[in-house]
Amino acid sequence: MTHSRTHIHELLDQHGLAARRELGQNFVADPNTVRRIAELAQVGPGDLVVEIGPGLGSLTLALVETGAMVVAVEIDTGLAKVAADILGNTATVITADALKLDWDALIAEHRGPEVDGGVHVVSNLPYNVGTTLVLDILADVEQVTTVTVLVQAEVADRFAAGPGSKIYGIPSVMAALHSTCEVVASVPPSVFVPKPKVNSSVVRFVRRAVAPEVSHGELARVVKAGFGQRRKMLRRSLSGLLTEEQITAAGVDATLRAEQLGLDQWITLASVVDSNG
Ligand code: SAM
Image 1 (tube, rainbow, N blue to C red):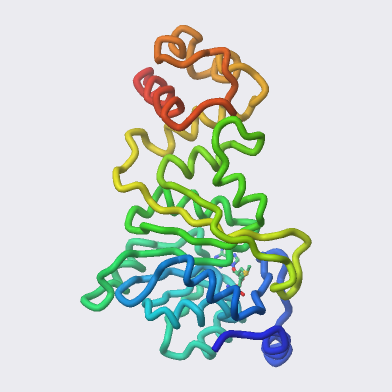
Image 2: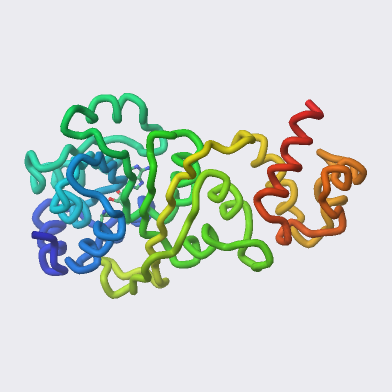
């Protein structure tokens, strides 16, 4: 069972709730969409799924159907109560801000003999915190092996962009440091209540098997400097961190611009900045 459009309106009315824009509340009112997301997430029995923002439980119901153990983290107390009622003992609903979550404690509490598979994040993400949440999870929560999220199409495309593209930027490089990332489906505004103005996409991140050689923080410093002045050549945009000679000695052409640099070159430059101390 998943929610229809009528059912979502009824649930909101019944509980005296309304979609809160500041929390990015656009509820999915289409069973096919939530089932497709659950399928694309490739989760099932033995897996622990952490869902961020269950709302009224649309996607949660589909995730429960896969047989995975589902823990859903909702910031809105009113919605968390409704979701907990609807889901009963099929999923655990926690009222918390996902940006401040103690991931180690949550994972330790819910993994066990019958939940010994991977840890996966699946979410129809609130648009205002989507990019930050994904990058924080990739950087800080190593146990999470895949992240499958519905976000604005533009945000998904930016995550998946590669060098040479106009939309290649900080999120693309930082996501690539930890994962391979692919846009796996597109979702029209018509499936949401209320309907957003833009298209959405499902984007899936699969954590790299080998941990990166530089830290997230080190790479972020260099990448931010580079894309902070994306039209300038590296010798200029990175001048606060590296000399032109250092860039060249690292085997990188200092006349390139940030959007032309692949992950390996960013990592090389970040390592030189690190060795500078
Ligand atoms: N999963 C539901 C669905 O697909 O219909 C709702 C998705 S809605 C786009 C985003 C949900 O995230 C809302 O329920 C919102 O209250 C919740 N949310 C917003 N910010 C949050 C945060 N920092 N931590 C946890 N949940 C958050």
